[in-house]
Length: 558
Image 1: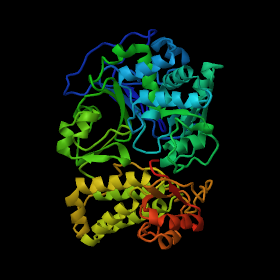
Image 2: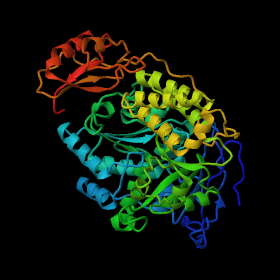
Image 3: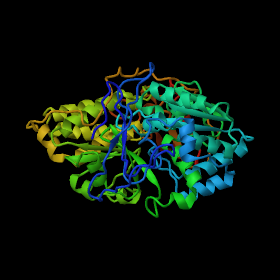
Image 4: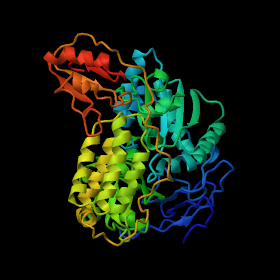
């Protein structure tokens, strides 16, 4: 049974057999489906877009087992403040040590991709705030620059109060002075702003900001820069947000789903939270399947069950973790279970929860080229190896797929090596990892294309990308220059390149030969180079002579 169609916003659906109803509505019958059979779905009311909404990409919702984050959405398309409190109840207040204990006892990890333990992040922010005289902030990273991810969009459109609960709970425990929500879609901003109005006056300050929609907006330093009124670009400096984040104060920065999970855990308690999922990985998680359906599942469920619920199968292979992720072969996808430990055995990670099966009718080589070109256009435009290297990688890949021969495939591998570890953020590395994973997952496809045989299949766009964007300017956005003359340091010093400043002049390779080697694009091959003591004076000369002030000497042990 399908939901009624709408021109711009398809209605979300949720499995009613597992979804608790609001108290004012009659409870739905519980008819659990057998494990091998996808649970039935029931249409929800159509979400009518407002005048400021944007068309498309309103996710369909589903659940395997009882939903927690998506609870109540079988009855209404959006939980306002009253419906939210009626369903979930009030939010308890927790002392700092209680919040850390809750995060530890539930095993809560970040849900934005890295999976960092939330308790450790809390402790780091608490330490930072003590050193900063109690100043601190909380940031909700609601940016989903990747077209294959919609889970944060689903939460902020349909259950925004659950996310705000988690952020305010953390801010109250930490004593933070501000909670800032960063989003990149106008309809999401409207939903969050509406939720803030529904709450009335709150402390600390609670605000939402619409940021530029690009792939790298969600990078930590880019997010805090944008929320602080800056350009919203990665800084290229290894500064933790727990030490210096939003407006220069220690900041708890985490993903939208992480805060929603925290709000659920605070109400259920550690024991209640651990009734779903695995003993080692308790709770549920959100997945975006096929770029359009958001599914809440408990940890430990099989990937095949999730695909079956969404009317899909592994096809030619399944991309996990989005466009910085890796492909699973059909055989691995049929046996994989959704947990960090199980997926590590396949060399894969969940990342931000994107699950993209490649159907049989599309060309995997062509799909890879399409995504590689999009990723190149999503560069922040400030690091030469990324601005020049990613388009060169995409072009080399396209030449290989058009029949460039074995030499063209070798050129692709060389271009991948040329961009690795050479940017202010992980975008070049992630893009290279995606291409490398595709080459490893579909070797025969790429070999046939490279030798002119092709596969005869069209590129259907199974791996979604947004509309064509104007590539960013290659002119770097300047940042404050590092000190030209470092202080004396012990041995084991390193000569470092700031990718956000480097313009590829190449002078450093002449001044410090043997230490700095240039890549095929004219930029240094590496961001950090061991500096022998005998070359220290020449390195200092290179620092002073660099036209872009992009070099500095790092003391040993730092």
